[in-house]
Every structure is written in C-alpha cells, then in structure tokens.
Image (cartoon, rainbow over the protein chains, first blue to last red):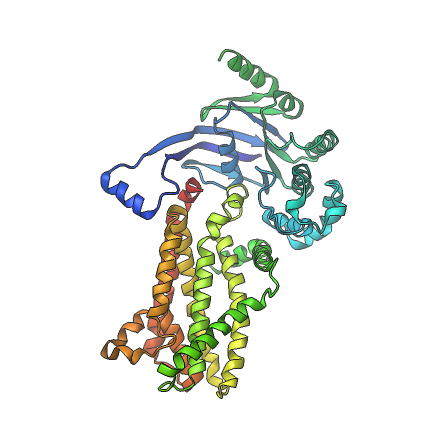
Length: 245
Length: 258
C-alpha cells in the first residue's frame, strides 16, 4: 500500500516585481498595461509513489523544485495541477527554526511547535521529558528561545519532530546541522526511525549522506522528473550529469 | 456540516489555544502595566472626552458618561482588533509557509486574544454604568446580540484586511486614515440629531448600530425593533461572508506574495 501517491503534479509560480507595490502603483500599472509578471512552471508532471518504510532522497541542482515538491507533500501549498494522496500523519521539517517564537521560553515553544505538528497537549506532556533530554536543553527550559544558539535551536527542532513519531517525516536539508556529537546522535536516531517503519523524505545536496541513508532516490531537474529508482543508480546518473555540465 | 465543524475544532483547538497564548504573552511581555493597559487606555479617553465635550453635548444627553463610554469601548475594540488582525497573515508568513497550519487559524487566534481584552474592558464599563447611576436589569441579556454582531463584523473585516494587506502593503496606511475618519463619523461624543434630518445616515455605519443598541438597553432599557435586529444581523453577517469568499478565492495566491 502506497503511503504517498503523487499524480501528475505541476506547480506554477508567479514571478516578477509585483510584491511590495502599493495600491496606487498597482492601479497605475494595470492602467498602462505594464504588469511585469511572468509565470514559471516550478514543477511539471511529477508522478511517483512512496511505500511505507521507504527512505526517499530527492536530489537535483539548485532551483530544481525540490523544496516545492516538499511543500506540496506537506500540504502547505496546493498543486496547480494534479493531486497527491497521503495516507498518514506528516511532520514537515522544512526549516528548523520555523514555528518557534523567539519571545517564548523553550518549554512554551515545545508546546507551541508540538501543537503545530498536530499533537495533543496530553501527548506532548507525556513526551516532554524525552524531548528535552534528547535535545540536551534541560538547563534552558525557561530561557527565551531567541537566546539559544542556532545549533541548539536545530537540536530542539529535530528532537521534537523525531520524538513525536509521525508516519511520514520530511526533511529539507536539515541533517547537516549541529556539532559532530549531535550529528552522530541524529543519524543514530534516523536509523532507529527507519527501523521502526517511519517513511522519510529527505532533500540533500550531500550525495554521501543520500547514499548512506536512502533506499530510493528521486531526481528532479528544472522542475521535471529525471527518474526515480534505487540509490546507487540514480546517484551515478546525477553525478554524470553534473560532471558533464 | 456540524460534523465537519466538530472535526475541525477537535483537530485545531490545541494549536488555536497555543497561538492565542503566544499572542497574549508577546503583547504584554515587557510592559509594566501589562493587561491593565488595555483597560486604562479607554478609561483615560473617557475622562478626557468627558472633560472636553460635556460642556457642549453633555447638557442635552442623559447619562453622558455612559453614553460616551459605550462609544469608546466599541470603537477601541474595533480599531485595535482590525488593525492587529490585518497583519496576522503577513506576520505569520514565516510559519505557514513552512508548517502546515491553516492560515485562518492565525487570524482567528489573533482576534480571540484581542477579544479577551475587550471582556476585561467590559467589566470596567459595567462598573462605570453603576457609578453613573444606572442599574442592571433583565434586558441586559439582550446585549449579547450587538456583541455577537460586532464580533462577526470584526472577524469579517479583519479577514478582508489581512488578505488585502498581503497584496498591497499600503493598505495599513489607508486603513489608518479610514479609522480616523470613522471615529469622527460615529456619534461617540456627539448625538445623531446634530445633523438634523440626515440623522438616518448614521444607521449605515455598522458600528453605530452596535453602539446605539447598547445605549438603548443600558441607558433607556429599550429593546430595538425586530427590523433593527434583522437588518443589523444581516449587515454584520455580510462582512463575514465577504471575508470568507475573499479567503477562499485568493488563498492559493497568498504564498506567492510572502
């Protein structure tokens, strides 16, 4: 049974100098017919399936649409065309600092961010000691979040997302943060998650990391699917492509 | 339909309350007076306005203090809530562009925390009503109606404003000017008969409908007509409906402008 199905998804972006203009400017431009808006297909006809327990790596050069496909899968953005079917709870970690509020304490933030991940108060209460100890922030529970270093913030975010046991975990280049000790810890945690059957989708530029962790790889280049298949094959194809550029 | 609503509430009530707590804490984090400021501000306005205007309008208006205060608390609630609600999408863009929490939750949590402030001011209001020499009576239960309509209106208008603000940043300045004009066009410190035959114009102002209803009940213990109720409710609801339509229609576009 596929845990995620992506059917012919395409995403169109509007780009141009249209943000931050006021009403006056907008009306003037409209009147003169000078709207500098172009449409760009960030993704075109993407179709693939993910099975439960898969560890999918997504690779592709910058601007290829990797982050966009993650946003579609997380439900943050609806596709312009096509549809997706997701059969499970998703924990998207697209930006480790997102959802946290600098003014609130670490403890308050755990509850806020945990709520955003879709968990109940009771659940977070139960898991709270584990979350704090995994992220090694016991002494900082009542410190304002903005006072933490970026490494500490990342630890907390990862701890929260991985300890709340989603069905599907989505990571956008977030495994390369923290000191070596934490990286070892998070890699060990990732392996534990894999074995417990959590489906994971990972975007990374480090082919070494992809080779180490992923069971399947999807290659997206300039919005189009170049292929999906086993890790070794896809990585080799990608490397050949990059070397020939 | 009800089931969908129940499901939504069940899914989102924890995030909603956490967001509300967040808004509340951020607002009063470093202030000395804290929550009391939201009560003191309308009170100061009342005292100043009373001092200045009772000479001109206070003579002909019974219970002028209550008359004034009713207008002040409604206008304050309206201005603060819509202003703060206007920014709720743009200010939380960093979150909903990376986390799948529905955008409208941020707006509603914002409105909810502003409304809690309002209830505190209401408590103060009723104290002043007593001081002014009026007494409570059973008809006060009808006050729930204008408050409900006010709430629907504020929600709808905040939805419209927050959507517009995503697309046009100068909406905040235009709205500021609009609010100033609105404050003067609503009979807070003056009475409607100041324009004589044209006093019906004020009924076009939905905020006046709220204030007038409250004054009728609190000062004169009179319940407005059925026509008033129907028109008022329809008017308030229309703002909410327009707000929903705008959100539904332009929801997909928000992310492009963030």
